[in-house]
Length: 84
Image (cartoon, rainbow, N blue to C red; front, top):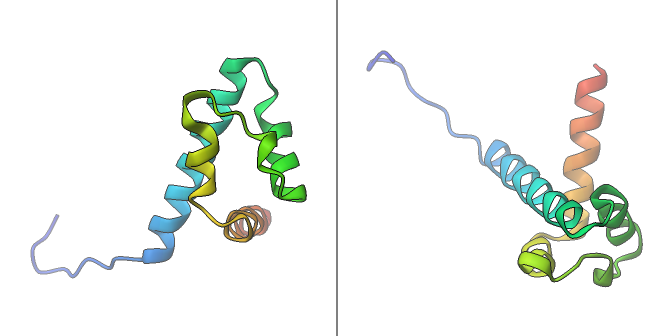
C-alpha cells in the first residue's frame, strides 16, 4: 500500500459485514442443532418472534443485538445491488 494515498473508512460497509457475519453464525448454529437455519431466521425476521431462534450457542442473544429492521434493510440492499 502506498503511504501517500488516503484510506476511506465506510461505516456502512462495516455494519453490513457485521450483520452478514452474525447471520452466518446464527444460521450455522441452527443448522448444527438440526434446524433449517434459513427458515428459522426468516420466521424471526417476518414475525418478530425471537423463539424461532434457538438459545443454542447463545444464538438468540447474538441475533437480538441487531435490530430486525436493520437486518432486513441490509438484506434488501444487498439483494438489489446484486441484481444490478
